[in-house]
Image (cartoon, rainbow, N blue to C red; front, side):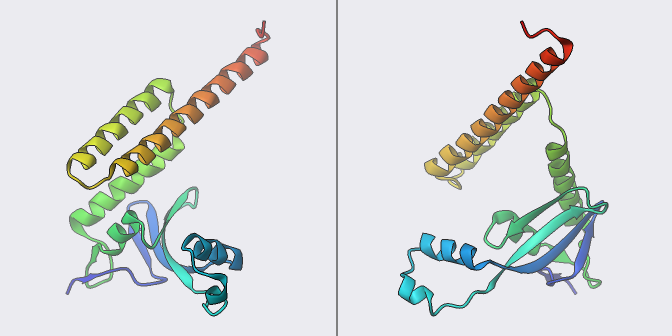
Length: 176
């Protein structure tokens, strides 16, 4: 019998990755910031309790890298709704897709790449945003935010490349 949704605390496997759903209690300061952002009056906030939020964490088996998604994020939902078999494990195409996505995420965060790589990646991201916008799944504001984030990543990479080049020039003694 197939069930959906991950069990809290259970460890799942997808290729060279471990996936675990857990609850993290937010600090008093984090809860205050969230409630302020939601415009909840302070006198009402005093009567609310501090509860935890669910996260899903994917990490390499070796522990060399990990990423977490909080409840409410689309990837959290995608993983949490993956079917598991009678043994409580991912299986089939869903398992293959999750393994591939996590492997790509890990590779993408482990490889610095050069400017050409970053520029091409940004172009692909923009094409993806355009496709999503044409399907009515993203608003203009979401596209602008996503493009701004992509541009910021590219600028950071350009700045990093400049610093690396400058350090190489200094190292080689050619800072004229």
